[in-house]
Amino acid sequence: MLNETIIFAAGFAVSLAVMPFHIKKMKKKHIGGIDVHKKDKPFIPQMGGLVVLAGITASILVAVMLSPETLSTSMSFLATILITGLVGAVDDFKTLNAKVKPFLTLFAGLPILVLHTYNPTGLVFPFIGQTRMTIIYPFLVPLVMAVTSNAVNMMDPFNGTMSGPCTIITIIMLLSALLLGRSEALVLCLCLLGPLLVFFFYNKFPAKVFSGDVGSLSIGAALGAIAIIGRLEVVALVALMPQIMNAFYGLSSMGRLYERREVSRPVAILEDGRLMATKDPTAPITLARVVLARGPLREDEAAKIFLVLATISGVLALATAYLIMVTP
Amino acid sequence: MIRRILDFVLILLFVWVCMILGLWVIDGVIVPMRLPGIAEGLLTSALKVGASAGLVLFWLWLWREIVKKMFWRAMRKQ
Image (cartoon, rainbow over all chains, first blue to last red):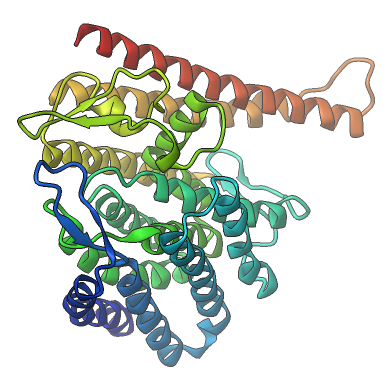
């Protein structure tokens, strides 16, 4: 218990200490973006994901020092998120093509495959139990990394709608790890939770920092890596349902992979500052647009709905973990 | 606000229940299925994978249609 507290505290403290300096530096260097959903269009410093990466790295190093037997799982987790972080950093400076980005994130699965830190027998389902997918499963690992990282990256329309739900998902995966006795997943969730809590504090409405793709891609990859290394794949699938729904609606309504800067905006801002869903039939049907379909909302109200959705899918994920536990 | 959340709760519940029921159908019906006239082997396995994949695709299609209908109906009311 003491070790776990120290692992969590390391990431939390590093992120908390570094974030104010990061915000100052980004402001000074004018690296950021316009918050398009505010009437006054403020400039917000970007790449807060770098601080999350620093926090996770600190936690991982502490975890390895405290229990050296976790070296291979910790290193594969760290390498995975650093690869997606690198892809995200490149995308933040030079927008990558809608097909290139998912392709590059496939490589995030390599450290898990090379260090063999996945469950070689395959997925564990409710009712079915342990499956034998020895041949197919290694091919699914890069795919899972690409899906989770890009699904999380796609669901960042309002302040705190990426960081908040991801924090809830991490807590749910942590509880599931406790329920199912998955110690690797427990440690990795603690490594992610500390930096995420700090980032959510700064990213919630009104945001003081944006994650950038460096943050959203690496946080998504971290959740995917925890699912694979910690054998929580089906639990993660249910917990990530709002993100998957968002990506699925967007892709199925457009009929192709798309970069958000190249399509019509699904959400518009009214005179009074409230947000509304656009009626443009060529705009993607994203979760944000579906949330606003019943009428305009303030940004903080819309962001709260995302948190409620994450909590509901989290409860369903816990129910899934329970069903896995009682499956013989 | 409550009405909006309720819409999503129903969709999430529908998707989750379908997933759990689908897994149960695959495990309890499709996998133990014996096809008359076809010996156990590659063909039977391929048919079972095909049936399971079909079930998953139907689930995704149903999910997409429900959301599309719900979205455009809400937009028209607005």
